[in-house]
Length: 181
Image (cartoon, rainbow, N blue to C red; front, side):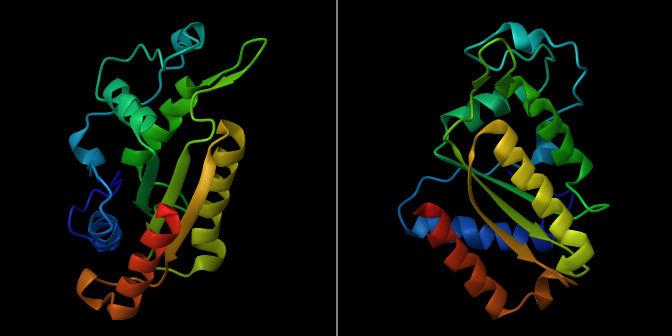
């Protein structure tokens, strides 16, 4: 899931390298650009908490279809440039809505339990005091939602896609092999 508003920016370039490598390993890859998905914010009506075996989100936009795709996937990659130490607003809306995948009844149900999720992120700044905060949010999501953290690829100090370089492409392709296993 590309969470960047820039369809051909740094994050899209790195994610494309990961996806290309996964495809070359005979993995089926679906690419979703969050900017095309019409996903609004969570309205916190908690209707979803009354549906224990499905997302049950009451908001009728692109969110429910995206949750179905996430639940059907073996691995989900969330990709985002760092915006204000976190996900972009576009991806944050989806992340916030993921509350519908955690049912907090007497016996909690975690619809993502055992699913593999990975993070791909780019930033103009360094990892420390910047990307590490997004990494902590992602780790907290893994713990709370009971999914398996398949790994994180953090690419700091990005300027333009043309300046990413072969070493970052190699790192992205190696990351694809790591998360595929």
